[in-house]
Image 1: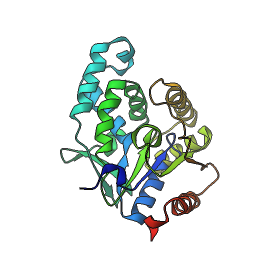
Image 2: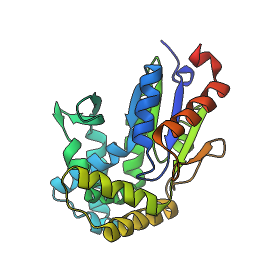
Image 3: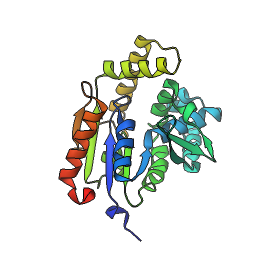
Image 4: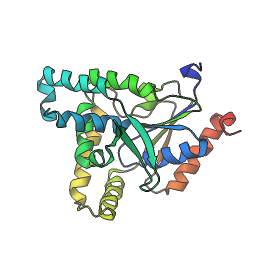
Length: 240
């Protein structure tokens, strides 16, 4: 059996809307590797928690509620599959896709709220590590390189300005026929950035050995090229 530490891993961290999902898919497709969308796990946990009647705004004031969220995290069994029709990575629980439920701004806010519970993070940590399988893994998230896969030889931190990310999200929603307010989206993103960057548990920061890429003025293909060029220099045997 292959030791987990020998499994090739590329981590792609960064804030919401920076383009991590698209780059993760492109890199994984090129290499034929598995994908982990860790952000989806937290979104799923937030959605499942609320569906269980848990008021996420009360988490800071109730250990009982935090314990309930943690137990839900321990019980999660998630699979990721690429949907060629939507060109998105979809999460499944018991054969049911949760893609629509978790791809909302509310779900993103919920994910940020449950992510501050250290015991829930610990429960999901083991779940995330189990995604590391041969021939390799591309892990998309916020702490993949700093917490989950610290031994990964190739780490990327993909970022973009809050204004740019809000504009991208606005266009996504409009193209899907969903009404959106630019000012509200920007405020939501800024609030989430503040929460993610300043939380005491696994704050959103680049790993010290990561390549930081600002995608604000770059196309997806330009970002993809930078990531592949960097990975090729770091681990040329992966591309032999």
